[in-house]
Length: 471
Image (tube, rainbow, N blue to C red; front, side, top):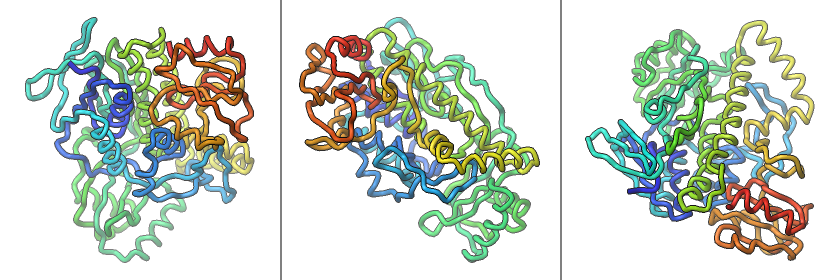
């Protein structure tokens, strides 16, 4: 019997599996595909996800294979020249394709002892007071104390639980893929630039290995979007939309996506939980989906581990949905807004001009970019210091960096007074007595996910916060 079975071996599932292993939890990942996908559904990681990787000592692996681009001052394709100041050591987006992210996280998961089974499709589940039994397509069964569905927007786990997935069905569909073209680069880019003056939904441009990434809207929405398009479909849509097919040929992969927007009615049913696209889907505007799923896993991992290892305070596991579902709802709303602002209808264009004017104000710029990058998230921990509920940025200490102290996934009390104590919680909270010129509070208590649970200098005031988050 495993502690946790994770359905889905994408970035969300692998991140969650690795987080659970930090606490010695026995994890099995079931992945339907027999080999890693070549589909590039996402093209980069945003700032907050880079901080997450740094907190676990993984960031250099990603830097080696990605390319850094300063965070752009843009929203819904509206671009402003002014640079945005972000409170982070990583004010850039890391261009790195989703299959590479998945591979790096899989390597890490194997390193920390996660068992991964490919070609293993979950087809059924039943739960009782002691655990969950899952049925596989080959007729075998496995059992775990908990199951987490990280199996994408068409999640089998979510459907088996009967959890509703309300939202808006697709109105627009795109065909996408990586392929070769025969048209000269100059001709391709000239035509694409001209088309994107009036329609930002279209794109053709160099990718990697001599390939081009193609994104083209379709005239109709396919009934079964699980079936990838043919090369001929891509050619036809390019001819319809751009007047040429650019001589596309030899595709590496082809896929289709839509602007469907949905949010699971709940993230938990007994001993089964949802994370990533299994809990929320939205248009890819702003490139937020990959980071959103990784951050779901980062929030859930330590809480589920605490429940399994026996020290979770009451309500800790339920706080996963309480905290992360509103974040997903906000992402759905900002992608809805971006979709409307990118419409070519007169009303939408008028709203676009208004938003463009508002984006000349620095506070508006920061507000929108913090939404996209995940830096603006603040969980509701009640009244208190402005840092309360927010993620703590990396801080230079007299002896090293803050994030270097967080690789183990434990809570952390950064104590500049030297008078505080975590006696009774030493097995789950590190006490770091150090100082920083960048920190203007006497002490700060961080959860394993880096969010600030308390600030102050009084031991008696600290105690209930240790109990609230660490049992």
